[in-house]
Image 1: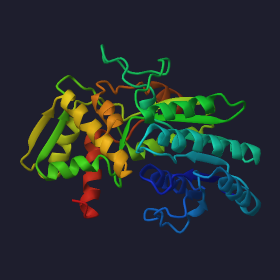
Image 2: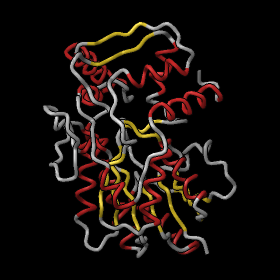
Image 3: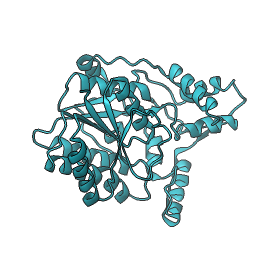
Amino acid sequence: MNNKILVTGASGFIGSFLVEGGLAEGMQVWAGVRKSSSRKYLQDERIRFAELDFTDSDRLSSQLLKHKEEHGGWDYIIHCAGVTKCIDKAGFEIGNYWATRHFIETIVRLEMVPKTFVFVSSLSVFGPIREKDYSSICETDVPAPNTAYGVSKLNTEKYIQGLKDFPYVIFRPTGVYGPREKDYFLMVKSICNHVDFVAGYKRQDITFLYVKDLVKAVYLAISKGVRNRSYFVSDGGVYNSRAFSDLIRKELGNPWMIRFVCPLLLLKAISYVSGFISHFTHKPSTLNGDKYKIMKQRNWRCDIEPLRRELGYEPEYDLERGVKETVNWYKKEGWV
């Protein structure tokens, strides 16, 4: 029988590609979704669905118990579910740390621990370090997240790493982009409107990761039976703050464009005002205090040599190839 795998957050950008990756590996794939989740990118008839409510621990427990009674457990779990935008810090802790903790506690109690539990974390857990010499962040560095999102991911990592005999693998991707992604798409829309925006005047080294290369790394770890390891993931390149927008512009046919460089002090003021307004509207803002700190960070280099050495990982998409495929998808789908 094919190995059974659960991908949580399957209706999301990264999750939907992880589902496709499991199907390509010949696995029996279960997409973990909420009842209200969109299934737009989960149309393959081979996909099975598991409705999981991470906001309610009691309900989650009954859902998992029912699944175990009817279908058994899973050989592998990729936990991609979480939140990236919240009104306040509590929202990140609840949506990332507590939701994951309740999930793991439940599968342990129900004896549903898989052979490998993959947790999709973030490079943001390390925060703005090594900004004097712009050297690569490595696994021996001490995490110092300065965003609520990064703190919630780090707290989750510490919880998982502190579990006894729990077969985890943690991935810390840098900025992930690709088809279906909506945050980087805002830059595409902006360039379509002939405007590009750069945060600050100081040098900024940025790293990227095409979504299919993240999927590749995850399934390499699963196939090789890796346990109790944490990895950074990027495409191996380092880019300046203009590289991404220049490549987007090229794929859009080089429209005329005005590039604005926003001083960090002004950006900070705008971000915090926007975040303040979101508290009253009760709607997460794209631009807020957390987002400002991310845009302010100057060094996003990370060391992927352990991933290469231990898993044989070699990214297939540099930024140029990835942007080309992404923009072509946006065109095909009528997003631009």
